[in-house]
Structures are given as structure tokens and as C-alpha cells.
Length: 479
Picture (tube, rainbow, N blue to C red):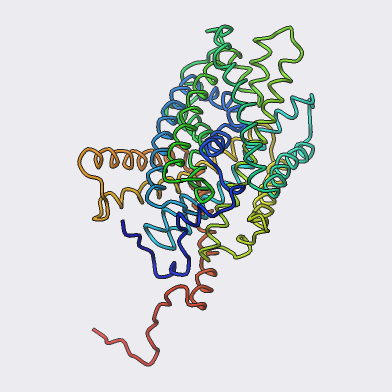
């Protein structure tokens, strides 16, 4: 396949397989670490708060979760197919869009994905704080106290990433095991303690079926964000043409099965009126399973704390790699590609951690409880649906062009995957509601303001084509 690029991208040297083979092995991830990265990115603290939010929609939330799981699996296959065509790509969804459509669409996708990445970290840490409060029995913490706790959750992963990818991958593998096994325990053993009376109505939203789906769809998709983690960090993955697809699919399928089992079990373990009002539903679930054990609630709270740190470590890396990739193509401020001797983009880590810190300060000073979590989830979901949509149409463009190599049933299969991914991304945006889509539009427009200055600089440096303006002395003929 011939790889095409826009004139302005000629400066960027493609990363060849030889370059990847010559990388320091300490900075590369194999299939195990890549799969752990995907699972660690998907299964954060969101799953520990998700049953409470889904309960607000009713038991329909389980059905919506299953539908979102199928969509996430399609996206996992899609990202694997895109990586086969564009291996060693920096930035994943950004790289796919820029490769197919050029600089401006690529920048907009990269901007949206970068925004959702660090805003998503704020959402993860807001859920993480609930379990820190439960672990240390903080009964009525103030907003500023919770903000101080959130700072630990954001900056400890930042320091681990500053130490290097090898240390991050080691912790990621350990944290996945620590959180996966207790969740699996609830999803299997918990069913022996389930009571039918605890399940709420099918639609508990108090409104239409559509409004209930909107409540469930947002948090369900948020809980699957991370399916693209291996694709975004493909340059650091050994043999990305094969391992990105495998890691994405294995990680997503494992997470999906766990989510459905666990969420349904928790809804049956905790009374509906209790579930909708708590930010730490797994503490209540363990207390139902072990009513006479004082350690049960704190044990699961500790697991959630470890899980959240693992997810935040993974997402801090993804935030950094996204901004680094865009900056290397001169479509983002250049300091984001500043790296130390270990290849760690330290400036991107610091900025990508400072921004959610400020966002959390604002949210904790204006609201509290699940309101903080649901607001951040809504903002994150729509801003990630845009990159998913562009990735799907990038693959669709390739499949209907003359460059494709697949034919017959393989072409029909790939067209079905790309087409379903397009519809899935559009449906998630639609189901999120008008207010959230409006906020995402404002974020998109703000990114265009930054692009105006970046593009002007690239034109001065000869990296982008300057438009030719009509001289004043040439009169425009009148009709």
C-alpha cells in the first residue's frame, strides 16, 4: 500500500520497523504489557461507581451496558485494522485521521482526544476519592479535603510515569491482577447473595425511555474508554501490526464480560434506593456478602484505590503520548515533545496533570458527590466519540478507495465493522444529550483558535502551504 501524506507533513520522518527494533527494550511493551495497559485503562475506578449511576436509569442500564460492550469490541477490531495499515503510529486516533484527511482534521481529533484524556483523568480521580473516603472512614469530608485527596491520585501516577515506561508497565501488570480478581469474585460469588427485591424498575429515570438510555449510555461508554490505549501507544508496542489488535480485543472482551457480570450482581446485592445515593456501591455490596465482617468494606475500598491508581498511571501515559505525537508534527505547542534521556515527555506529563488538578478544584468548589463524577463523565464521553467517529470514517475511506487490498467477503466484513463503528459513535453522541454536545462544540471551537496561531507559524516556517491572496491593484471585473 502506498502511504500518502499532506505536503505539510513531509517534515515528519516515518518510523520504520527497523527503528522500532532498535529501540531500547526497556521502553517497549509486549503483548502482556499492552493487554494490561488496555485492561488497566478500561477498568479503572469507573466500574466501581458505574452500578450506582446505571441504577439511576434502572435495570435497562444492564442492557445498555451490553450494547456499549459490543460497540467497544467493534472499535477494538477497528483500531487493530488501522494499526496494521499505519504501524508505529504516534497518537493512534490522531495519526489515523491525519494520515487519511490531512492536518486540520487530524489536529481537531488530536485536540479532542487530548482534552478527553486529561478530563477523563479528572473523572477517574473523582470516583477514586469516594473509595479513599470509604477506606479511611472519612464520613463528611469538605470539597477542599476531597480536592487534596484527588491531588495524590493525580500526581502519584505522574511521578511514576516520569520514572519511565518500564516502571509504569510493571505496576500496571500488578494492579490489573489486584483489581481483576476481587471484581471477578463479586461477579461470580456475589450472585449467591442476590435478592430480586433489590433490582429497581426497568426505567427508573422518571422520564422517557430515551432519557433513561442517555443516563446509562454516558457512564457505560466512559467505562470502556481505553479500548484504543494500545493503538495510541503503538510506537512503544513490540510488533504493533499483530499485538495492538490482540491486546485491544483481549482486553476489551475481558473487561466487557467482567462489567456485565459485576454490574448486574451489585444491582442485586444493594437495595435500589441505597444504590442510587452512594458513590461507593462496592462497599455496600461486600457488606451484604459479609455482613458480620468489619474488614469487607475496607477491603474492596482498598482494591478500588489500587485500581484507580493503575488506571491513572495508564491514562497519564496516554495523555502524554497524544500531545507528544501532535507536537512532533508541529500541530501542537513544541514544549509537549520535550523529553528526558529516558524518552519521557516530561512537559506533557506535568501539563496533563496540572489541567485536571485545576478542573477538580473548580468542580469541588461548585458541587459535590456523584454530581462531580457524572459531569466529568459527560464531558469526556462526547469529546472521545468525535475521535472514534473520525477513526471509523478514515477506515471507511480506505475501504472504498482504490488503495484497498481486501476483496469479497473480507471487504464486506471490514465495511461492516467500519460502518457499525460510524453508527455507534454517532449514536453515543446523540444519546449524550444536547447540553453535553453543546459543551463539546465549545471545546472544539476553542481548539480552532489555537490552530489559527499554530498554522500561521507553520506557514512562516514553510511547513504549510500559504494561500495566495489577490493583490489590491488587480481589479475584480464587474458583471
